[in-house]
Each structure stands twice: as C-alpha cells, then as structure tokens.
Length: 327
Image 1 (cartoon, rainbow, N blue to C red):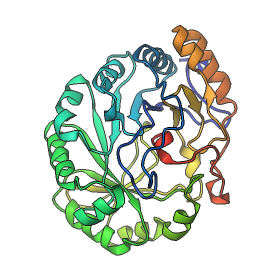
Image 2: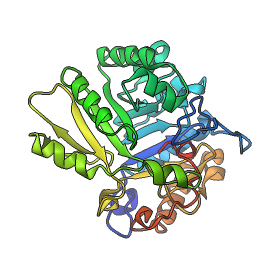
Image 3: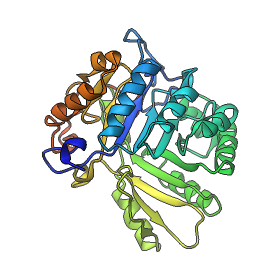
Image 4: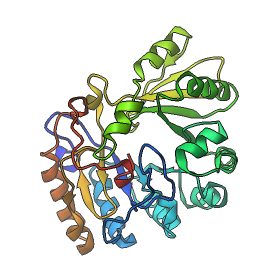
C-alpha cells in the first residue's frame, strides 16, 4: 500500500487509531473534570449518523483499524448502538471500543456487544463506594461493577480507567491490586492532566505514575508488548494475578513518540492532539459525504501535528476539560 493511502506525519508516526467523540455531555460530576457538572457551552449540534459514516469510511480507507467511541458520556446518545454497528460494519475496521462511565452498562452492554463492540473501557476511580461517590457525584459503584461482570461474560475485552489522585495514594493502589488478584481485566492508572480549568486542582492532586511503575517492577510485574493499535498505556502482568495493570504517564519522557491516534470532536473538528491549540473543522466534507475529499483534507492537516503535547511545560491548548474530547 502506498503512503498516500496511510496517515503518516512528518515525524514518521503512523495513525491507525481514531478516538471519536459523539457528545460532550456527561451526567457525572468528577472532581478532576466537571466538578460543577456539565455546562452547555455549544449548540449541541452533534455529529449525525450519516456524517459519522463518511468519517469512518474515510479513516478506514487511510489505514485506521481501531475506533474508540467516546464523550462526554457516549451512552447518553440514544443512537449509540447504531453508531457502534456502523463502525463495526465498515470495511477495514477491526476493533470498535467504547469508553463510558458505566452508568448504563448493565442495561445496554449486551446490545452494544451484539452491534459489534469488541472492547470496553469503564472509568472507576475508586473501589471504595464512598470515595467513588465523592469523586463522581454518583453512588453507582455496585451497579457499575455488576455491569463489568456482564461485559466480561459476553467476551468483551474490558479495561478499567482510574485517575491517580494524591489524597487516595497507597490506599487506591492497594485496593485495586487486591481486586486484580482474582479479576481478569486490565486496570490502567492515568496521571491527572492539567487542563484549562483545573490548575489549582492539578497542583494539589497530581501524582506521578513513575514510583508505581518502579514498585510494580520490584514486585515481579513484567512488561507486556503493545500491539500497533494500542493506546499509550505501559502494561504489566504478574503470574500471581488474574488481571493486568497499565500506566498512562503523559508527563514521562518521549510519551508522544509512539502516538498513533487522532481525535474528532462531537462537533466535527479534527484534533491533532488532546492538547492542540484548536480543533480543525472537517465537518463540511462529512456533511457532503465526500470520502475522497475528506481523506485528502486529513492528509493535509496531519502536516500540522507537533512532535509533542508540551504538557510538561504547562501547555494545555484549547482543552478546558477532558469531557470535551473524551481524553
């Protein structure tokens, strides 16, 4: 296949992974993201199914093999199952993933799996029900854990995301380690990232994942080789544990060197990085249904992608909070 049929930037990074936001609305009030709850600051004219179909076909034709549907909270869209099916039935797409807060997991996971969902990421920042409610604003941990069991029973690849927060420290790690003794899924600890509206919270709560990595290695955890469609997590396994642990450490050296993903917002803007200065409007081509023109536009815009997100220098770009683009 010639390079014009691939998405490769000027640094030689190839992009096989699309993170597609379908709404910026979220019904949780996580203290590190939307502590005051969702504030409507746009027309909420979110991408229609036919626009998404054009987008997915364009990316698939350029070598994208994995699509992750994100939000906000994507399950708040009534047509989520249709969107999953659309992605799954597009030639060239091998993996369809979903990131969710788990609020509707119990009632919807079977229909998502039947539509073609292959993997699921669920945000659970604490296994202590009181801490979970304090972080998210919802006392739903028990129901979400039951939904996780359903997802695993259906054969989905299941991962749990937990943001590292300084107040919970060792207790957070210990509780999850005990859980992973018998729970066959992957837990990913994510370093808290600075965004446009969380400067004080970030300063008070950020903790590096590097000490956890060193602790895991000292305890006999071993690195897992990542496939080329994998996200940015460093994953580890241990013979005495049913589950695995991943670490997403965006402040670590060379984090961006292995970048393989692009993002499209629920309003139809291409974000070359989670922390890009602005979204680049590609919606008119999506509305026109012009796959070839959209592919050319994507190739042209990729030339603007920087080598790094520059988070370590305090740069947050246009990202006010993570619900804007689903992380």
